[in-house]
Image 1 (tube, helix red, strand yellow):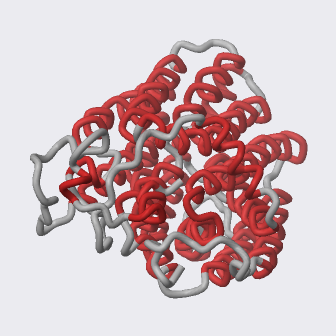
Image 2 (cartoon, rainbow, N blue to C red):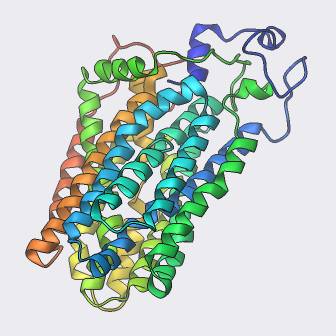
Image 3 (cartoon, rainbow, N blue to C red):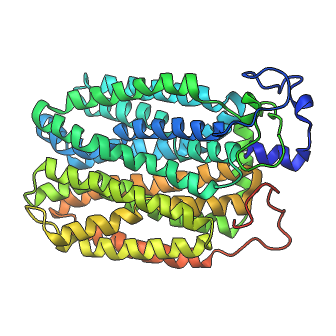
Length: 458
């Protein structure tokens, strides 16, 4: 998948003057030797990606706030609303690997801009819905497809193309963009929902998606060669590879090849549990679960936003650790600690915020998506140039796990009147994920060598 790696493997010692001739010539710079700016353009691309992911957090933050208002207004069961959320999460995951391939075919900028417009359309149409199937269509299908097209595979693709050095750190920072957006949007959306209803909140999500489009179109570039630069940390200029055709077949071929390895199934299994215990469980059901114990919705949503504060710290730190420590050991630690925190959660839920709840928020927040940088690093180590596509399939398992728990959590609440069994079950699954992470082994000597541009720490 990694464009920089592909070219490096093919022989990246192409003189810059030659690289600027022909179809792969940089489009934004005059002929001559590539510029070496004081601040590398890769950091601007990373910044635009970060801002885009912050905007995307608006539509990721809303589902948990919709459950009670839609149940009250339309009488829809929590299981029905959870089903719409589960469709959204499943499509988010299943679209991701194809989106990574489309970025190779049509470019990052076009794919992300179209994805944002699709999200804006789906969220905007939601405000006119009157039937449950319309929720499934608008929020489940449209927003799910749009969000999947700019999922974490977007961050992985940007990192692979624009960075050679600091990949783990940059992955952590970009992953933290969603958490930063959650911090910005969750309190605002919860306040709007409580005081003005859910429709203005959905309209804000639509507007946020539209607002990010100009930044993507004007400032994002697909490849360092577009601006006459080598990737950050690379020692040689790499020309931009031609568009990759046969996207669908390539994505399926990457899945076929990866699925023949035990590492893929261990990564997919652990990431499915990751999704079940984060997006599917806490992001979707924490607010209604806290509200069941008498906590105001705004207070519960603010706690979920505070998780985002510590998530930023934890994820950036995880990226730094990933450049230095075995990724599989990091995953085992993260999943083990997450399982302990979820086992602890039912004892902390109350009608107000107490110190034990604050302890859970801090502890769980540091671990929220800290699993992403080491998971991407393991995909890169084992699957080389197809690593972003393989990570897209691993992400698909993440979202399938999330979608199952988003649906089953609502069903359990309807049937049992409590979320307790869901918390405890998820904690046990996280313990299993910790053991699975330790079962992942390094690449065998017979495996194809990783691309030469990858950091030695990976």
